[in-house]
Amino acid sequence: MKRILIIEDDQGIAELERDYLEANGFSTDIAADGKTGEAKALGEAYDLILLDIMLPGRDGFQICRTIRATKDIPILIVSARQEDIDKIRGLGLGADDYIVKPFSPNELVARVKGHLARYEQLTSRETHRDVLRYGDLEIDESGHRVFVKGKEVALPNKEFELLLFFAKNPDIVFSKETLFDRVWGSEALGETATVSVHVNRIREKIEEDTANPRYIETVWGAGYRFRS
Image (cartoon, rainbow, N blue to C red):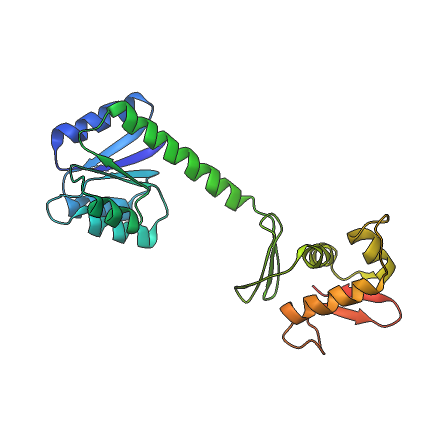
């Protein structure tokens, strides 16, 4: 069951939010002041937070900033303040949505469900992302990105495919002919010399010393090998 924290000093509004959310299968807690709400948000595990701005003890903007610095969960501001500057500030501090009072309880529940669904999809993709790591080299297969010491380097499609093939088959010597067939395809037009060109380009981007490569080494008379 998803847990939602309601930080709201208006008891009637807090109970309205609680009743509609619990009727839709959510578990809720209510904090009636800013300091208590912030402490609960930081100290307990919640899936989403509904946050008022005008609160005793500590305002919602401060709370949003503090939560966002340590937790990446949906934060929905629910406030009577409807000026654009307040909306811009709240969203700029990391809130995922801004709902103006008075609001439709059914719309509130719909937005809560929508944000939870999007958050679950995002975290699911991140959890199942295929990433290969060797030393300072990181290859994000699904994202088609390469990082060296945390800094992204740009590889065109064939360079990426060649590096990925190497990384998925470490410590095996492949001839230029085999690499060309595996990466470019047996029906591709071209010469195996293009493999050497692409290897050199990859080395320029991922190796500290291209004369003494850490990752893709030349095996003289045989081809190339990716060192794990």
